Length: 226
Image (tube, rainbow, N blue to C red; front, side, top):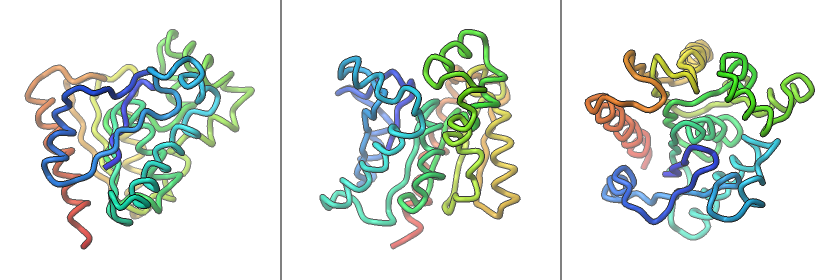
């Protein structure tokens, strides 16, 4: 399993992570990449994905799959991907831009369309978008090319999207639209919508339910092939 952190200016460090501990307990290899755009490796690394989000950071996650296979740490056609927030976005980037590498993807509170997300964002988030991806009009082609929503026809494995109905950062409407589009395309898509949650789930029963269902999804796709 490729487990992708959010942010993107954040990183996985050597701390106890209950979900990764659970995945390893199932006998799965887990790779948690600190892709280009992550913190902890200096400003050059942190800014390496600027004006190319969904590009180099997605490629880093894809190359992680190739590394695992080449070093006999994973089997071809036996790799799933999951992530939260920007990690959910990159999960959907992996499923659309590198579909041959993954047998399933679970995206938690993702966004999928830079243009729509920007339009519906708060002013501070709009500033961040422009700072990191340029002006939406001047760079419209880039914004579209890095938006998984426009490439959902490439998905060839089951997708799960988990979102909060009151999310101001990654609106649930994007997951709902993507789910409906995937179903129309004949793709396998599962949508879990938590009506009383936002970007970070606060009710412990919802946190547990969402994570249990995410792990069940990964178990299904990983156990689906010999």
